[in-house]
Image (tube, rainbow, N blue to C red; front, top):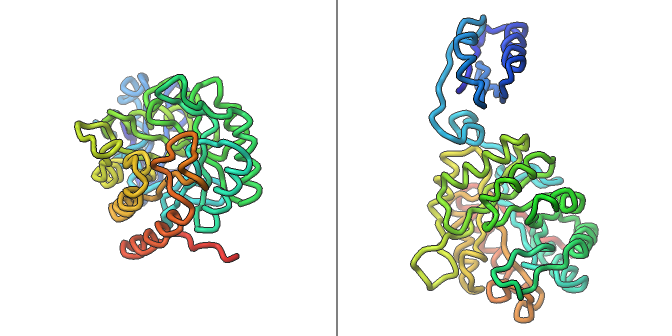
Length: 343
């Protein structure tokens, strides 16, 4: 529910309302909306506090929130949120591009790829150190060695690092190297993992599950936010349908739907949606045109030799060409993509 404090509510009365909620075990989230203060009240104690709160000075209204994800919904937080990762802001006028290999394979591969995407205008470096794979015999990643390499290339390029964490017990380790923690599609409803990343300070990139609805994605985000971490970015990466011409079906309609229902930033992953290198730029352009706040894409210095997802990984030249295309699309919708770096 939302407790509304009017413009005439004094600081003393506001503090009294907050203290009363906290004394009675309630959890709250404060927002200033216009000349009103909105207190989002969550948890099983909320209903029991209604009568007391309604009679307190300064309280003008108590609204029931129908949505099951109150903290990530626009109903509670009408203004769009920005998530800061290092010096990068996701959710503002810039369309942020994150790029790098599916898997960290070695120092040379990551340095060449990281340097190439940075030169073309990428703002963040992506790369998998821990890889959840469908087959137990596929390359599973380098683990902590991969994290060390990501941190090294961050020092070379200045790009903040986003990488996947696959188990609750690895959150502290991955967070000690990465600037942003990714929850992959297969773990979107791993509720212990969601709560664990919600209890730490790093921003979270949350990918939509392979067969998950928009509401299920928002409920997963609510797990993270309700555990204390408001810095969540949502990612549409394609869902499984009956169509087999692409790896997944890119649900471009999810971008405006998510932005209507939630204040959280939304990015797209055209690589996993397409599964085919030649299709990736087309889907990336459509995501930006639909209002996405960013794009995360797989790039490899030698994709035909990649240990994972080489078929859908762009070459460095292909990535640079796509960036030029995205700049034109972003400009057409009143936004911008970072320019290429001058040598």
